[in-house]
Length: 309
Length: 239
Image (tube, rainbow over all chains, first blue to last red; front, top):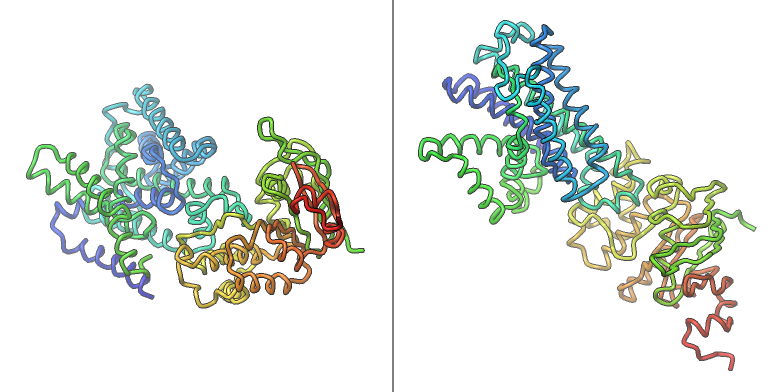
């Protein structure tokens, strides 16, 4: 009961924020919501299944590129968005097929290498992909269900709808039988095998879902903010979701949103104080690892809020 | 004569130069409790790892319920009905007792999972601890949970690897009652505690240096001279 109220409360607050916030915060919140979807995808792999990937920029950027390139070549926003979801899922499954032969540090390195290779490929074929500079999406094409996504209001609505769908699906997933078997892989893989679970297929399915979320976030990011580029495939975009999830709490449903929101606010606040806002990320990470390795919601859950989903 | 449920022929597995299991034949009949004994390093755990699929054999074949399962991965053998409980307790320490049992039960109990979990917990005496994090249970309770997860799979063959290791006497009594209460499940039991072996086993196989030294009823094993030499201390009871 309490988890249900919490999720509904958070979504209601976000709807209210859409009406109340001034324009600047409004745009920022839309960005946070999309990045939170990316972080939720990352959380499915890392937080719930225990797969520490350093290559999720690949799935994010693949989703973004697929949608962007399709629209550049005349496809409508709706089908292009679907293509983005497919690209995120497909890249996660293909790299997963190979990367899942490894575990632990090797898995991190293999996923990192795939993402780097993808990024370099995008640069190599710069004539087609826009390379380093990327390309803007034509304003006229950025319409979804009759909504003009160049406007702040519809943009926020679409970001929120995507986030809400992602959050509720994630919540249902981690409470399901399959969610339990994902968590079982994280907790004790050998035991899971001896209960009849196939570690490879379970983890591959988790990665595919993770890629679906990441691809959706990348596609939506391009569509909502009108710009697509290889710069979203750099390793920075693999680290960000990891950071969000660590900050908010790995293996918690609302941790990704909390982490993405807090980090954006921190960087924003720091930008007005110092010229090196990225140092804030570094310091946050160190403080986090030292004092709250389970993240904010993870720590709260440990300290007594056991019902926290 | 009951039907043969598991038949291993010529199983071998070497680690480097060490032949941990060397040409072992083993036959289990349906419903029996079969003990596997032998000194430390005799190859008992390696042998059951071959049977459960955690290790692949270098040579030999394994037939289970009439089918060749030699090449099947462990998780597929579990689905066929071979359950294995670990010698070193291997539960999900970070999850609740409920989730631990649910993971074993959820494949066969879709609608009545909560009931099935409660039933499985009651059977091993852990019903009051359903919402307790498994890692915080006492050692004896963790051992019982380990066995309970194996039982919850409703296996046709349950392999217990030193189940009573580290248990207090009262807990061993509970364990004996639990195992005697099972009907129709074939049990392969690795055990060092000879009282437990003699209390439960209908047949005993003795391993030494990776080979089968003797196999037979408890009385026959007790009287076997080779077994006494290798295992029971060398002092011949009959002399």
